[in-house]
Length: 313
Image (cartoon, rainbow, N blue to C red; front, side, top):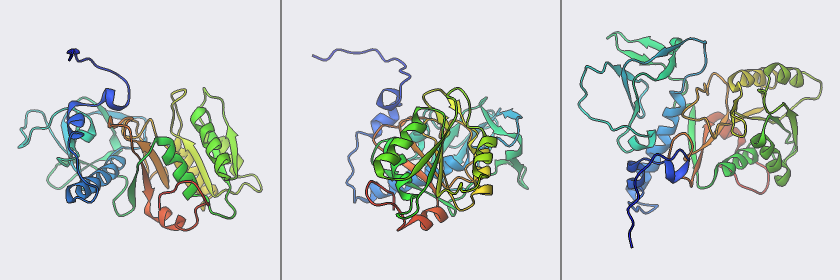
């Protein structure tokens, strides 16, 4: 017996919080070697870099309210703005970023607090555009068929050489502590620099720690938004500290509950690896996580990952 259930807004991640278009997309079965499947994977990977590139960093405390509709064509280097009174040749529905992957467009609603003032520039035609932080030439994305924790383990394995690995974990909550469990289980030597759960990871404290004799690490890892408390760590500032005092270390950020929603300057923060999951801020379905990776860091890590576990190359 089919009992109709009235639709309602469910503010939970995963299938319960997916838009109708995302759910409808799941109704199509495509073989893993099918041309359409390969094209879709390529489009998603490209789109993830676009999202990472167009999430502005906190370059100042002054924000502007976007009074225009904005659309960005996937794979291009600019985002164009037009006022609501101007018409577009295409109509785009509201929804999550994943709704538009097949169309190749990402929609920014009007009146959203989006961009730092310094992120704007004007072209010769006086079109307002957004300067992107990273490029497809510098960064790539890797899809992983597994949970967010799976991707965290993959990067920790990848960035830890078979000989001489030493990881510094900047911890102020449960998900930072989970990285320690992963390292211990995987046999990766790791140290914890711990902070109170209701405080941020303090860049000055990190600076002092990295300045002490013998503080040499192959990887420094931190959680952007510590889900257990909601505390958002200043990962851009921390990244600059890490690269100044430990330039050879891999800098790894777990952005599981922030990517695509909370401003994060990937390039300005000197991130080598960032991980997140489809079913968080992107409002996709559970089942795969992804890594935003510096191509240089990815290439340098190949063949050096620790034995056992999962990795991404």
